[in-house]
Image (cartoon, rainbow, N blue to C red; front, top):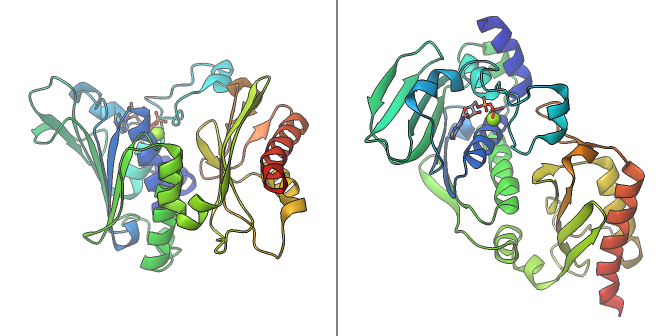
Length: 320
Ligand code: ADP
Ligand code: MG
């Protein structure tokens, strides 16, 4: 069981940023409105995420760390209707097989928190803490040195973690996030709306030169902002696309957006954008490799056309 977990962990938990992503998704699935991410040494030494979500009752703490115990997929059919970010029920178990994990949680109305340390076989003991959950992951890959060797420098691993936080924070302006590294607060974003959150994360250049998009056609809706190509400091890491709330980097979507920009681009700098596509979950396959950020659409052509035209129409406002 431990070995299977460690092998699976190699897929789910490629590097510290993958842990951050899984823990943030769990916190959001729990309905949190306030999330704190504390990292040490690029996340390798420690990733501690505290939320104010619905918490985990003490009797369920062992289940949360057990493999597939919480899988939300009862049948293949269900795969088409997942609305939560997590659905495999393997992330925490995988993480716990390659790191020292403790989960502390207090549900609404509970007189105090409870904690479980180590694995699903650990004991559940009373603890202290506010309502919500803290998942503390320490010494990633301490027991799998071969994997640890593949990690890059602290700064590189930190950069990946921070990028994951940015991606998720951009999609959820209704949630406050704070991020610290080695005891220093790096970012803090208050609850806000998309206009402000995206300005905070992508900077004033973006905020001052962007066009709003909100278009719907049949089962498809695209909303967000397309940065103007005139923005002086277009950045290479300023392209954000979400499908049903998940950050993706999908060839078809990137192509559709680039094609829409074609006529207005001068120079080789690609503008920033934050775009969110919403569609019936039955029309998109999210059952992809856990560490991948690609999706498969039922009707790729229709999605491509829709995104292309929506962005193109928004950009046409500039020349009008
Ligand atoms: P999945 O998210 O795919 O269900 P995970 O291994 O990521 O599986 O998490 C296992 C379970 O632990 C979740 O389904 C959820 O019930 C519980 N859980 C994990 N993190 C949190 C959290 N921050 N708040 C509340 N419940 C949580
Ligand atoms: Mg999960």
